[in-house]
Structure formats: structure tokens, C-alpha cells
Amino acid sequence: MARPAKEAAVTALADDLRESSAVVLTDYRGLSVKQLTELRRTLGDNASYAVVKNTLTKRAAEQAGIEGLDDHLAGPSAIAFVGGDPVEAAKGLRDFSRANPALVIKAGVLEGAPLSADEFKKLADLESREALLAKLAGAMKGTTAKAASLFAAPLSQAARTIEALRSKTEAGSASTTENSTTATDETEA
Image (tube, rainbow, N blue to C red; front, side):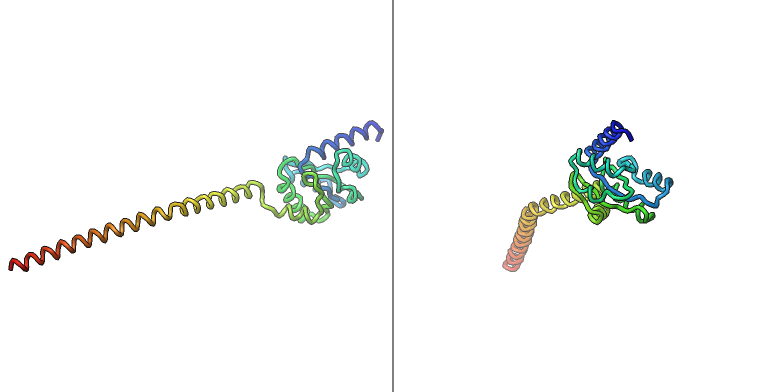
């Protein structure tokens, strides 16, 4: 590759590294072209998968200010550039690597922080962003409902106590009236 072409490739790769929310470095040795196409389809619209040259990737990572990939850039390498939810891409890669053991996840970078292959697998085990937000909303709603019932409890207890006293007072005055009527009837007789 001519020098200007290499510089352009490094610049394009550095831009992709900077713009991605996550980057996953893999070893694709043993995968067919058909399997790589299937992997690209599995990742969907929020990620792209490209075979890269190690020396150009090292230079691009240096240019983009990304650390943690240099030690893993040996042998055939490909990178998944994740633009959307990193958890979805991690799940796609994990599921594909389960079905195709030839795909080996080497390392990754999540928002500038290096990730090992094990940490990346833990990321794949997380629930999606939407599911986590739904759980948070449910917890917040539940907490609010508990607080409202806690604040309303003394008022409702006071209302029940007042109603019980009123009923008791009415019952007491009714029995007093009966007693006085009975006593009046007895004196007349």
C-alpha cells in the first residue's frame, strides 16, 4: 500500500475509533466469508465489522488516543465499531461466538476505557438500556407510591378513629335515651 493510501487508511480508522462508543477487537481466523457476512448482519445497524491491519490499527489507536489494544493486535484481527448500544453489540458478538467458536473476542474499549475479553462478556450479560430504564422507572414509581401511602396513613387512621368515636357516641346516646325511656315507663306504671 502506498504511503498516502496508508495515511488515509489510518486517518479513517482513527475517526472510526473516536466516533464509536465501543470497539471490540476479535480474531476471525477460521471463519468463512459467509460467516463474516452473517456476523455483520447479526450486529445490525448500530455496529460495523471490519478486518484491519495490525500496524495501521496501532497507529490509528495512537492517533485517536485509545489505549489497551496494542497488546492484542497480533494475528488476524477485525474490529467491531459500535455506534449504538454497546450491550446489544456485545450480546450479538457473544451469541455469534457461541455458535461459531472460531470467533475469539480479544479485547475492547468502552467509552475510552479498555476492557478485557472477560469484562466484555460481562457487558454482554447486562440487560439492554431500555430494560434497565424500565426497571428504574418501576422502582421510582414504587418508592413514590410507598411514600404517598406513608404520608396518607396518619390521616386515614385519624379518620377511622374519629368515625369509631362518633359511632360509639351515637350508640352511647341511643342507649341512654332507651334507658331514660324505660325508666320513665317504669315510674308511670
